[in-house]
Length: 212
Image 1: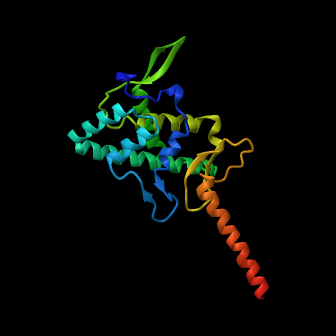
Image 2 (image 1 turned 90 degrees about the vertical axis):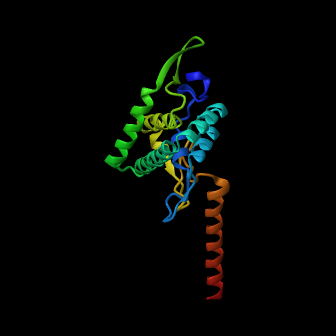
């Protein structure tokens, strides 16, 4: 792990982090989604919140971005492009459709860059994966995302990928419930909204029946 700056190692990474990245848009399936990655600083904050970047690594990249604003803007655009490719690919998977060729090309390009920076390092009792590469690489928080997307697309959990049933939320998640019956990205938000709408609709139908 280069300089000890990145805390998330390959062995520790939850593949669902790629879906968390896809969910950096609110109401993703709406006509006018709400963008959450509006600056490179937002990208750093997301990486740190997910444990992909340590505070030290985020600080270093923040300094590097201040010295290279055009590169930081280009990295943000690359991140958004990768996010949308991930989102569309997993929506297609959840609907049992073939992904778009262009989206797979975007994912493969990001994966190639990620793998180039993946290393094997000694660990207690053996070895482990770690992220190497240039510590000032502005897009290094995207490497674990690309790797996670590849692992999820090719792994046993792909059939568990779901899209929130509260349209147009659009958020994606891995259904790890025992019964494979999870329908909402979050029960406290979307789940309750749908239940409230259904309850209101039932009361309205009952009221219309009584008044009729």
